[in-house]
Length: 426
Image (cartoon, rainbow, N blue to C red; front, side):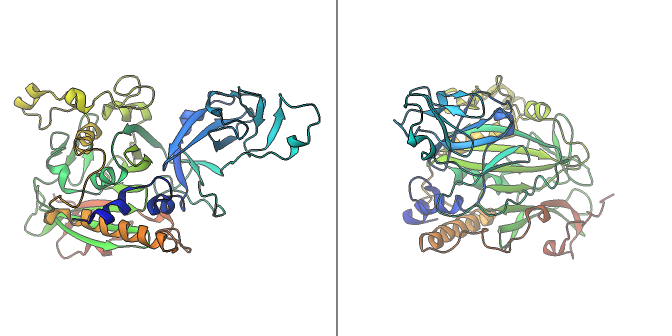
């Protein structure tokens, strides 16, 4: 459990909250590239860490990110005209380029000295791994951008689904680093099978264990922490362990143990204190699904399962479209799609969990570590210290990987190199 003060440090991001300050000391994934793919296309509202921005791609293909409200009379630039290498406010025709320079003032006299002096707040941006990343800290110069773990090269296929969730970022993140829940909540989609390691096809994921009560071991890192969930395998249980090693890269990324076809990751970015954007990624591997295939597998397709703002059609008001008849016939949750099963749990907790009253068990070791790590990290930021994971030299994210497999019991999971291979349990 956390005290109420610690819970506030962990969860609150709006205004001058220390956790929001911590997050703004990192490059922030603010939207999908596909949302701003068209030059001179419709501007996109960006909501991130308690603030609002507008993103657009100009005539020459450059991306701009500006504060949402025009500095002139504070009308929203979201409704502006994206044309001729700039975003023009509808109210009085002031126009801004991707760097925030005011390049036109339709309502001002020709030759007005204001034209060369007005500059709107803009933010450095870059594109990588399917995301637009922005440096949102106005008080610190943007550091060099480093590739995320899920995009080691431009050639790496990354497929992403997006959901707008009415829940705080921390309870969603706790779901991503909680290996124990998958054996129950996702048991109809993560099926025990006599496989060598985690596998996948178009309908299910498979794992070589029926063990629902993993033992947890954890280790802190410079970028967050990693831990092993240790289960009995179906084969060679006397001599081997089934290991699932999860990496938490503070503050946004979790690397979930892969399967034999592709890797899995999540990215969670708070919109405000009680709303978050959740991204579920399949990437790399020998058979990574294409974007729409991935979204279909997860029952998270825009226009079918989600509305145009990425809001799930499953909600607490319609009981997440839970099918009780399917449950009677053997489906564990009656809810289609792995992320939708998680969605039901996150939202049912309430918009922001009170962690001063919840009860934790032995399988919650990673949850305890996350809460302690991040509330302490927020305290340090409040005291003027650098943010966790933002101190140079940093461990390159592309050198970090989650792992899984059946290994001899004498192997320490911490010693597994990134090229470590599971011992096939034939």
